[in-house]
Every structure is written in C-alpha cells, then in structure tokens.
Length: 207
Image (cartoon, rainbow, N blue to C red; front, top):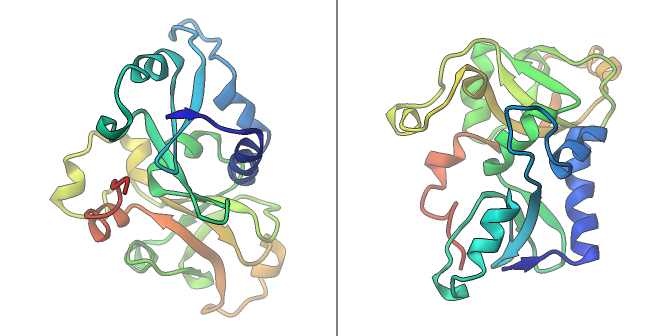
C-alpha cells in the first residue's frame, strides 16, 4: 500500500470530478461539523485498486505485510494496465452525496438497469436540469424499495442508500434528450448495485 503518484492522483480526481464537480474538495478536506472528529481522509493504492479512508486507518495498515492486506477503507476503483482509472460500484456511497447531477428512473426501468443495461428515455422519471452531454450522473429510483433480494438486504442501508442504484454518463444533454424517441439511450451505465450479485465472485478480489 502506498500514496498515489501525481499522475495517478490527476487521473483519479478527473474521474471523480466528472460526478462531483467542485464538491470533490469535500472528499479531501477534513469535515468541519462538530459531529465528526475532523480527521483527514486520504487515498491509498494497493494491488492496483484505490482505497479511501481516514489517515489513522492508513497509518495502522502500514504495519500489515502487503501479501496479508486484502482491503481497507472504501474501494473507489481500479487502475487499468494503461493507467486509466475505472470507478467501481463500491464508490457509489462516496460520490452520491456529492453528485452534481442525478437521474431518477421509473420502476419499469429499474430491473433492466440492474441487469447491466443502459437507460432509455422511456425509463427516466426525472433528472437534474441543464445536465450536459457526457456528464457523470448518479442513478436513483423513484421510491425507497430495494431492487434485489435478500443477499443485498444483509447490508445496512438507510433510506437514501436504498434509493441509489448506480451511476453512469449521459448520452445526451437534458435539452437533446427531450427530442429523443422513447427507446433512445439517454444514460450509459457505468456501474449498478446489481453487480454485488452478478459479480460477487470477482468484485473484491485483489489478484
């Protein structure tokens, strides 16, 4: 485990900023509210994956041999062999509270999305105004019901977490999407919570 290089940090922040905008600063700066301990959060690289955690946790992890360290903090994603960074679904709870743009999908669009499909115009209930093309968005359902069975219910989700279904990138701007046919793709899927079931054997592997 080690800190990110300058180039790795730029690649990571560029990807995160596509979803959070200027709110990215809130992930880096210590929280100022009285309910928190004010400790700084950091990013660390381990086995090509980037983890987000408190500095105290990162310091404690240095005493663990690299082969024995499986995971720590929250996994945001993974660097490819070409140096590009790919966000994983495990980053959803980190980026969702800071998302600049959001999309809400209708009940008939939830299952197609959770099985890895893109979002078509007919499945969109509403979305943030003035959303540009190729913009990162967080996907929400229209209600607070979990979309998958008992395996996901083992996770301790609050109401806000149950609403979050994944994230993607807009295929059209808000204005352009209004002129699309109902079957036209409006959001390209990047990750969805269905991956916890579909890819449970590989999602958390570090090899």
